[in-house]
Amino acid sequence: MAFLLAGCLALISIVFASHEIGEPFPQSKLPVLEHFWFRFYTSIPAALLINGTACGLRFYQEHGIMEKKHALLKQNHLEAQIKILQDQINPHLMFNVLNHIHILMQRDVPLASELLIKFSDILRYQLYECNREYVLLETEIKYLKDLVGVEQVRWGNELDVDCRWEIQNGNLQITPLLLMPLVENAFKHVSRLPHENGYVNLLCKQDGEHLMLKIENSYTEHYRALSNDHGLGLENVRKRLDIQYPDRYDLTIEKTEDKFTIILTLVLN
Image (tube, rainbow, N blue to C red; front, side, top):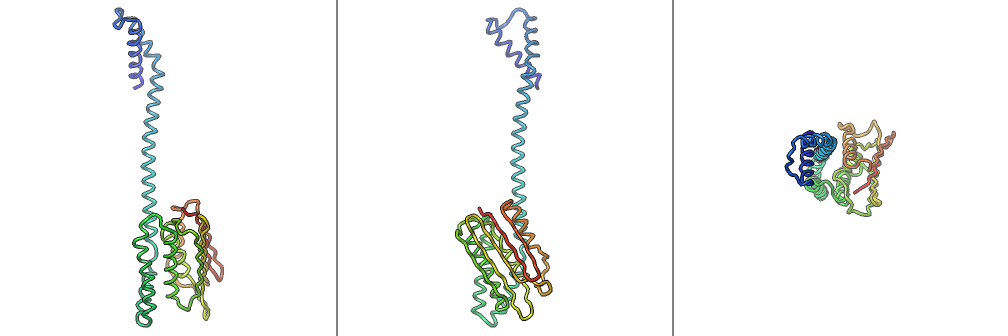
């Protein structure tokens, strides 16, 4: 390709040189051939440079296309991962609530009706609101409040629950169902000593773009509630944070002999 280009440059040079001296068709062939070969050899560096530049531009263009395809594939892969992680949310709560509603219908219809309304709001949120990448913070907080309300009804007087919601701007955005496993984990693993209530203390505070969720629940290894998930809920949350909030979160988990504490700080959009 470079030699062909050099030949073209040499030929063009001869044609322009002939026009400049007023002899488009010189009578002597030898000077023309000598001029052609001279121009041919001297045009090789320029031809190589032009050819290299064209190849470089072509490579850069192809590289850009490949980078875009790679980024698109990576984004699709991450979205698929997030969908899988959302679908892994343990459905045991749904079955427990339905079973509790069935029991309440036989002894306390108004309370069962209240629980059913909260439960329907939870299902509506999960079915219709969580198909988007982000939801309003106030919508996610309302969902968490309904979730806590359902748990309070389920546990009744056996559990002391103290929740504080300090949200200044509910119009900020957050990924849906991100905080739910943390809240569910506290009620799932809360322990109750004999003749003593367990407790769950929750603080959700938003200041500017920063959101802090602190959940503390009573914990005793011997009397803790049995579960088969072995921490999959917390691992689920950590994976989603790594994907959706890289370098924008801090998750601390502390466990002592009598309490379990989770603190999540998050930079919202």
